[in-house]
Length: 468
Image 1 (tube, one colour):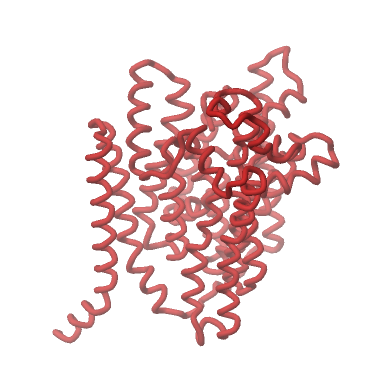
Image 2 (image 1 turned 135 degrees about the vertical axis):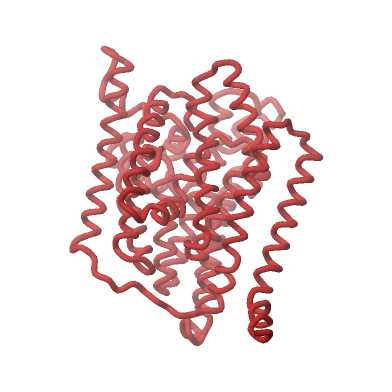
């Protein structure tokens, strides 16, 4: 009995140490934040809930993460799946996109009345950040030298807006450019690229999950992705759909040990969105798990390391563009900070200031900001953290690590308006929803909650209620 007890302590000690250190770090960061920021009661309460849910999820993740490296058995799922399933998934995703486009067009026709035109409906999609991406598609980046070097150039104006578009990465505009040359309409080209990327991403999500899961769970994950509020972001001329396709393709190829292809997808993913860099988190965990001789041969394993290194190389190409355009490889950080007051902060601080703004808008009856901006951001924030705290043990550890890194970085922005859009393109959210909806009644409940929220959020988007 004593020997068994000692063996249990020996086995669990690494997890306890890692968990203890993690809890201390988050607690110290939280105390430091309270001392330096002096937030109000609402802010502290929201931040505490955010930090607690994140900590619980991480605490539940750690034992599985350590066991993930100890146990190198490769157990791929071999159950049967419906014939032509990928074609069915692609058709379903296209149908959802058509429904979303039709719903937006119909809502615009109601809103604009006799002034509605189909061309106007297409042009409507230039809202959000789409206009920035499409400007880059047509004209590339504008060099800093275009404007005066004085502080005045940080004031408002279209020319200034074009210069600071350097913060938007070039992967998506470059993908849209050939279609822009064909159709001579950047909005149409962007819609087509996004509309094609999203069904392909859904198919790749299914393929990735089939490495570990039965058909039903993999397909259910795709359905949950289609039901999530904000699906219109995947259709918009922005980088979300392309990013999702590239990220899932990189992970799938890496899991299948097609390392050079995985590196190419990962590099272009980091060339498309900054958070593409975070692909390194799941790839490194999977790479360590493949350590020879059980995972793969030594030479191939070393090739996997090269694949991981290609991910930051893709972002390095973006830094090179910064240097050629502005003589500073980190110029995008300057623009982010001075034009959008944006830099990296604590994710729980985001919950605090968004809650403060929500309370202020409620007091002022500012429904546009309540229902279009702050409430959706907070629902996504706490909803995804709650799911993570509950499902952390059920997720593949490499994917859980990806979510942890992604959430901490993407939601840690000091002026976050696009939380729902950022979290929507994090596929682990759909995986978590699938993990808690195994029974039919749970699936119907999820649909009953998500579909009305999706419809309301789409209406807020059409009415331009500060949906970003």
